Image (cartoon, rainbow, N blue to C red; front, side, top):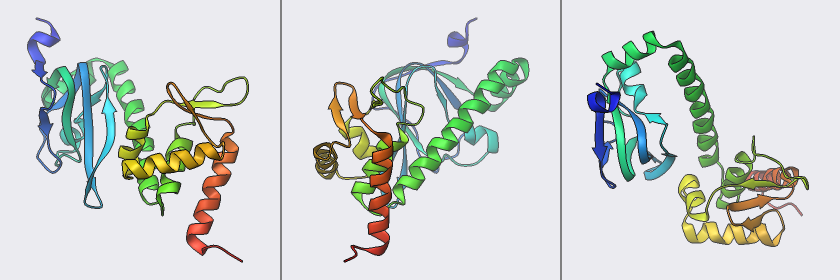
Length: 213
């Protein structure tokens, strides 16, 4: 019997798989479709990740036996593997490669979560948008002219930074007028990463100390 036959479950778009704060006794592996994870921060629901096929989620509740730290909703009709703690433990013990991949993935997610928390603590919308774009240049391929393409839409930026969509568009327009970013088919191009970093530093200094002079 295949894994899909033993542990498979289908879920239509819009299905809520679990909610933040609920007890969790299962983890999920995405075979097809997309899943959105959200968390309530400062009283507002904030998108923390959108996961495609091949990703897993919900593992922390069965590892540490604590309530769910986020909510999960199906964005696109999905085929999932649903694993209980006993099955998960058996798979980890039987396959070292799976265990190593999971540790690496969890470490990467921790880095991403820390970056998002840092973003949400920034003082204003300009800083949050600039910070989010700058974070996504890390590890991205650099063109011959030094520019880095950030694959993200304005709507996704608004969700991830908890900034109003209209305000997000205004900030992006200002950044583009300043030639700190350029619109592209896949998102935005940062022509000079260092200049964007210096602009973010300027924003934070101004926020802390106000305009001088």
